[in-house]
Image (cartoon, rainbow, N blue to C red):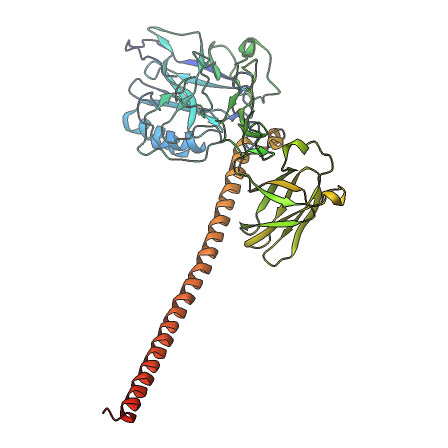
Length: 503
């Protein structure tokens, strides 16, 4: 966090030694949104600290990050940053000490280190990378440890996340996406960046809870020097005054996607306007946590009229076929309804039919018997004309063999809508992966349709070329016949005139 630099001169006559204790508060209850639990889990990089004068800054809010800060905040590599600090110390004598702590292998761990300051270099700055993250870090910029002629005894500060402005990722595990041109260092809040995908976006909160806390304690001159302690992991947090605050439960509301387009109208065909039903669905992007708002309904349905179906007359014990152009390797679903042409006899329980599907090679793909209503599915193996044949197999007396029947048939190819039954199992699949699979399925279907149309276009082109060729040859033959007949007629007329002695 940036600290206002006081221009008052430090007149303390002696050096001072401080113990810096870092306490991580990055827990899943305080930051439940997209909390990283694996590859890698939430943790902290080594802390890089500097004691310096007022004319030096390792980083500053609303200023551009250096190359060293860039590499450290993006990759955790401190070599360039250390070289920058050393160069500043040699060039303008503004840096007194450089220190570091080991990495903390957990979001709520703790680590400690000791360092020394004196009157000319009485400011402290440090930076610590948030792991994993695009280019996020926490830290302190120019904290004055001196109060005129004496050193401050105890300082405790809460730390909040910052964006180095070099990567445009929105989430902890975002892939690298360089920010061009580079932005300035900015503080991340519950509403900035204002995008629902951001890992710190909590619109119900006015302020983010602190991610960490740093405590600075002045060591008495007679106290024995102690080495830095090893960092603790999240399941080994020491007890004491440093972490006596209760964990914050940040409410996380359920977030869902936009509604998908309405699916195909499913149901019986016919004149009944309320027999069809269509669905639309949406996904859960983020599950609720810590008493956040529950998820709204994920499925919605409405009645519809399957007006894309057809109906035709069918005599009992007779078979009628329709032809459907179907691409290769396409799932086809059909709905069929059989009823009397005369509505007064619609109560008859004896109606039945047989569905037979044949491919372009007239091989049977499906043969199935149904009652009055049925649903059938099959997958095409070749592109081209498929034959869907319907035959009545009612169990009426032969005296009614010529009774008229009405067949309603609806054939649908590759439903793009999400199967409602699949929504119930989507909790086991990452929402992004689920949507990508859905898009891939749609792209594959579109690709098949394009290939099928290309095949049809090629077939029609060949037919057109053959027809054009035949027309040319037919024109030549007709011309030849006309010339031959004309020559024969002229010769016959000449012979006639000679014979009659008219010439």
